[in-house]
Amino acid sequence: MTSIDIETLFTTLFVKIDDWYLTKGQRFLTTTAGRKPKFSDSEMLTLMLGAEYLPFASESQYLGYIRANHSDLFPDLLSQSQFNRRARRLYRLLEWMRRDWMIDLGIEQAGKLLIDTKPVPVLGYKRSKRRSDFLGSADYGYCASRKLHYFGYKLVMVATLEGIPVAYDLVAANIDERAAAEPVLDYLKNAVLIGDKGFIGIEWQAQMLEQTGNRILTPKRKNQTLQNPPGYDALLNRMRRRIEGLFHELQNTGRNLERLLAKTVDGLAARLSAKVTAHLFKRILRTAEQIDVQTFQHSIHFT
Image 1 (cartoon, rainbow, N blue to C red):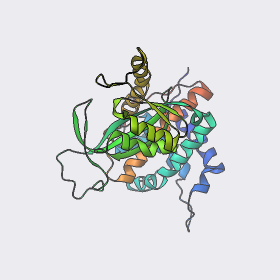
Image 2 (cartoon, rainbow, N blue to C red; image 1 turned 180 degrees about the vertical axis):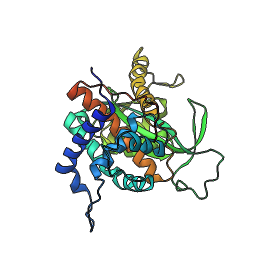
Image 3 (cartoon, rainbow, N blue to C red; image 1 turned 90 degrees about the vertical axis):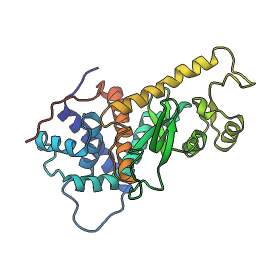
Image 4 (cartoon, rainbow, N blue to C red; image 1 turned 120 degrees about the horizontal axis):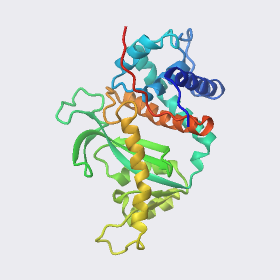
């Protein structure tokens, strides 16, 4: 595997994105009157994904770094407020692009998948929520494995056995894992999904099999009457660690998944979509170009 510098990464990203945008992406956009913006949608999508390869916690730091060090690549770079508005408008386009890229790689055809959930806090636990855009959408929840009380969402994700996200959704943090998984399961058909004990439930699993054609496998609790064959639970747990590794990578590459610093629901969705799509692009580079991209550690330099 080889590596590339930041400018080459941005250029490669832009070429891949612009090719998709010109051939497929424009059909998803509603045309508006007036002049086209100088800063193109392809440039916006490039920077949205690029943020997930650089170690900047906030958007202001990230855009400041781009303006100070890579203005030759983005001479018409927007202000932070303009960038935020455009990102919120374009995040659904990112998701369409990600799905098309998955089809190109044949990832959606995977028959065996992993499913798990992860907490996504959005506000301090004791902070007032009355004026928050998340009020009525997010809620208080508890992550038992981490003994974490938080206010926010539960990220439900389905991934391949190689750790590539296939489908995901954000639901309020207080929703039961099985109910939280149902919208994602509706997206899949005739798959075998391996999950943790939060997805146990013979009747619920049978219902999902009947409604979606998806079969859900989990380790058994010790007090259950029906047990899996010897060694089966250990096998499932070993396979399930791959999605835990995926969450760890999403958490620690680019912006922190649990501190995305979004102030609106659409802003959170845009940053999550960029993070998941950027992860897929790394797979594309490894597969097509034998290039390995992890993250860049550069000293911050502002003019």
